[in-house]
Image 1: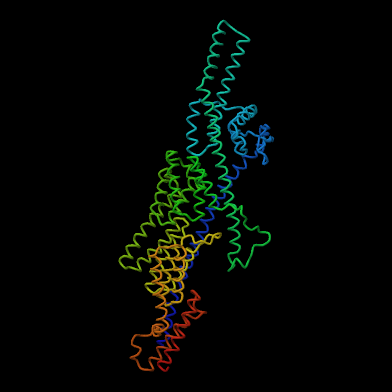
Image 2: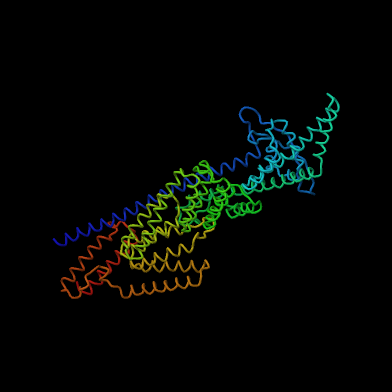
Length: 617
């Protein structure tokens, strides 16, 4: 009767433990789904951003009808150098005007961004403006002072196309004013009216003379020169954008290909199908795109929001989280200062500003700098206090920081169970934060693993450790280099310690051997390598001891005074504990890690066999 009651009690205990495990598995599945959803939303924002960039580049080369009329267009004879002998050949090209260009100067600059031959001489732009201007109603001209005041703002924000158009307008307006004055002067001289026509003619002549001074000539020359410089910078920005878009396109192809092969244990055994083109030498990777974008940022002394966002995206794709956090912070501070804080429109979901906030916050989470995440959110809320998404994230972040501090205090005092309860809340707070950070999440899981292991809840501990190791083993699919070797080594060390506590010494040695190999191949410091080798030696020693001096009584969870009992009671205990543990670890009963269950089952069977012989049962 007592055996039956004990069996029922053990079954209830096992059921409670299994319920905890099942709840953890469910929570991890929900977290994975939430992470996938966040990733999908982030990628959708980037696809939209890249579609806009693609449309901008496509619009440079071709402009369709606006639905009501054909866009005014002129044929421009362009020049280009041939490959042989440096000869110059002429070819016709169509320049179109569209409403958003504003005027002929903007249309000419847009056209020249697609035809770099314009850089040979300002005369090409000037003549094109003259032809295009006949097809459009020019807007009211700004004064020279107003136009010159706008140019530094354009250059500071990286809008070099607008700056080139402004310089072009200054030249065009100067020429137009002189032509108008000359025309009025000539008309007055041919058809004099009234008695003051002589004085009027002299006034026009004086005005024309003022426009022909050396200072005005130098101003025109300077405007022409600056127009070409700004046009060249705009073209370089277009080239960088194209490089970025090519890298992104290739990344999408590779991601799709890798996801299709994710179920294969060895990709080399499954070569690409004939329809798939293997990567060639002309493939644009993220490092190439980053170099192209940074060259523009450095050479121009200013960059558009779009280019700065591309720069951050390249760094994200390369796993350079510290760089992402740095450039994101610099860009956001710059934008807020330029806009005087900005308005609600600047912080709408999917806007460049909000995308930079999310990129920077995720990067700061990856490096564990929660204070920087907090600064990002505070920056947004100062500019737009009603930004609901960031407000919710900011609230979740403050809760997360408070929980982490509480957990640290509990662990320092040795309150493992209290620390575990708080860390479980931390995982929930992370989901509310809606930031995908595998590094930060794996750090919390490793703390849970270590704490669960110390209180002998090995099944849960190893499940947390396994998830953390998997998160930190994520590699770049093209280079197979670990994103964070140091982070992976930390996870392997903690899991090895948990495995040792569970007497799985073979796996503990395997994890530490892997950590040592990682340290040897990634240039770790001498101190790190020595520490890992020492831990490996200790694990190997524990493995030998486990095989040579295994306490089989502990394996069967027998009482400490077993040797003092009568032979009959000794055998009764051995059979009872074997039956109880075999029921727990039997493959048909055990729902946890199957490898661990099989190992435990073998250990229990071996212990029963050895002890039965020892006590002659």
